[in-house]
Image 1 (cartoon, one colour):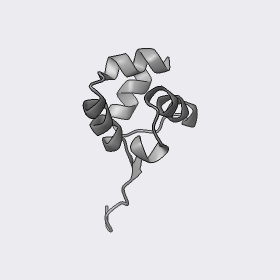
Image 2: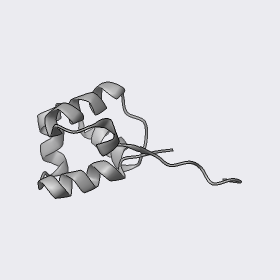
Image 3: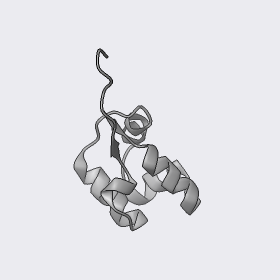
Image 4: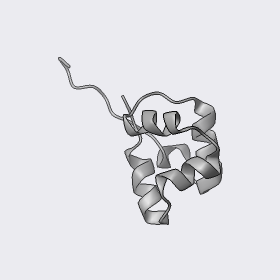
Length: 70
């Protein structure tokens, strides 16, 4: 599973609101909502976030392995 937890931490560190990021990166409310639910978003959005925040992919997403039996 992909988690956006690193992104939310980074936004706090940089004092950037989620809606500010959405506006600067140019994606929709739906994309922001999907990220909030740890759902898939297009890689181009991740790329744009990295450019806007001047960060690396691993600062935005992380892989969280599923627990066995889940």
